[in-house]
Image 1 (spheres, rainbow, N blue to C red):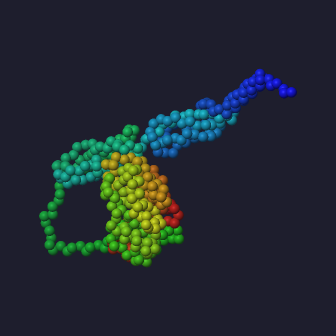
Image 2: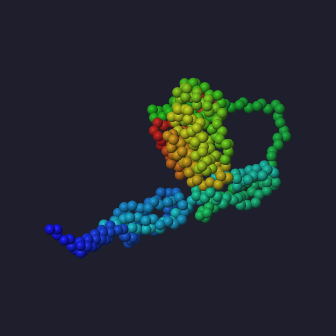
Image 3: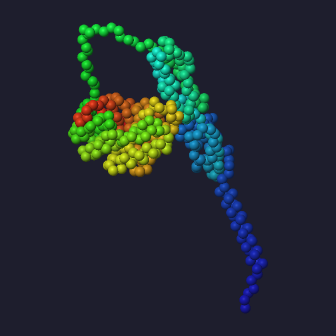
Length: 416
């Protein structure tokens, strides 16, 4: 005989079970929930971060009862206030959520490269605001103005001031002079005067560089372009060079076309035929990340059939056009990074070329390896670099005229 099921008891049991489950879930929630609580820590007096610097929440906490477990990322690429949340353990070992309002600020003055004295010939106009490089780390268009009066039609020395102000109110000011001069005409001559003996031009001998700088940890080579003309790479190799950096091409001005170096194909094929290691560089006027990516792809198209064992180099030296590009220093660094990342995504090594002064003043936000240009016997550049262009007046067998001489370090970077 079948036992009759008591539906009422089953329903009550299910209800009780649900109540128990809900109570248990609520207790768990109370124990694991993260409560907003700013009482477990104190802040330092200064809760600002300089634009483009690295900042972490720990930099602003003066005291805290427990440990910080996680935090929002602080975006230092945009000025203004932002609320940063972080999770920490309080003194009872319970998770709490703290919030801090951090302000990103720019306290850096615009960068102005200006001389103490400028001059112009009588009657000849001079655009000082275009001549003097004036850029900012953050603003694309800081205010850059010459103050004072001068007359290019009246000879004399005029005291002037150059004032640069960015959008954060940071101000650079410098006094300088503009001299308007009359051209000097030589109305007398001495036909009996003995001409001076021409002096022997100075140069840096490649063999002497080998003897002085070659070690087990480096290689000595050169970099070339159309300016070296016809090159006998067999003689270059026999002279002791082991590598060559070759200009693949250049851009014909801002937003200009890309021009293949007229000796590129000949140079790279002859260099490889003589077992020289090869890298390439592109002389750029890029004024946007889009342009930089386009240039990188163009370069890779030119070299796809060759064995490139050394880096592809982004070479931007167009600082006489920097004012007109309306770029910030950080923006230019992003352009270089875009070129380099584009070639690295295809398996090449990307590198930034720069002189010591520009590396310190302009390329300060870059993260790529550096090809340093510093024409001296011993560089005092204190950053890292994988290759050093030590002179531009080198002489080596196989090249008529001057050539740049480079030292390549076998480690990925070197600090000397």
